[in-house]
Image 1 (cartoon, rainbow, N blue to C red):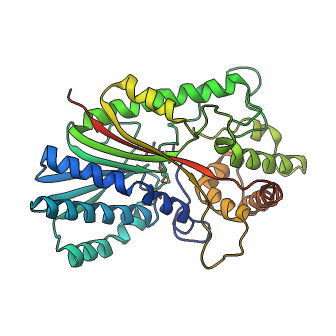
Image 2: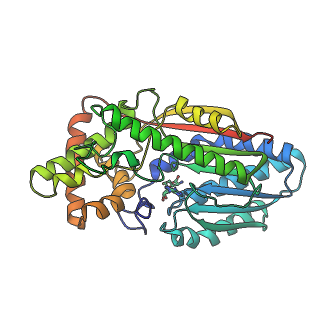
Image 3: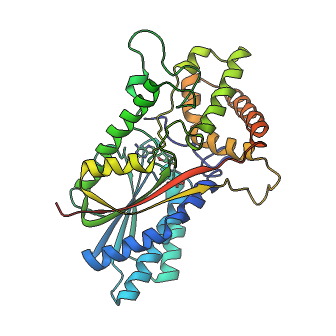
Length: 363
Ligand code: SAH
């Protein structure tokens, strides 16, 4: 849990500098966020509105979304002829997240909100902790937002760790198209446990009529081995294996590494929501995402673009498990780019993102 945070700081390989793709995903949920806030204000009438962003990370993205949420609250309040409520926005991430980088941008946000909307009563705070644990008091939240975080599990699926004998997901770091049923089941069990806990905890923290808008990576297909869920990790596994063949890392280290992540289908998410029982699905949309080129570097290949995103997200995990020095991480992603660009010429690849809008039902 301590290492599933993104690359810190604002250097070349940081999350802050490599999260344009995640930034694009933020805009996919805008109409659902507007609809959710409209309903909260017309049905719950909060005088003071409590908002949380779960998995805020360390770049500019979270405050971009906070600004948008404040803009929407302003628009909806005007439309209803109501004074704009006081706002408290809680930014949550794991304790090892680089919160400082976000906090340094806060004065700019406060100024902008004050200049654009004359709003002085907006209070942003940090809430370090796992969203697979309690974060807020009972019945205290009106609106929960989370983008690109909920495909992270609370831990590597326990059933993948052998108590005796050999590893069951050899030569792979996630589910692959050749994975056995045991590997798939281990991931599914962990996902189900985590999601049922997530919805149970949020049901305690969110007021009746409160809403959540959640965006995360997933898959269109019911098949967990589908290309849109597995492709990037298959290529990363191949790059790692080629390093093992060249004697740069131990193969056993690859066999024992598994990502704490799961990319669900619509049915899997809905099943967990229904089973827990406190939330109603108001709207679901799925998006096929193209990777976004950096406008300053339009000749960059897709492989290089994806390598930068994956590196900013996964490097802390690789460094810790493989005891990598920086040169080894460079080597891994150079190999990834070669493998990716060689294959991608045959079929352009897209990631798949779900956006769910949920409301809390009466108890
Ligand atoms: N919402 C941001 C960041 C997405 S990156 C954006 O849209 O750009 C995913 C974030 O989720 C990371 O910062 C990671 O540390 C955080 N995360 C992963 N598991 C978490 C957990 N269990 N509790 C809280 N945050 C978590």
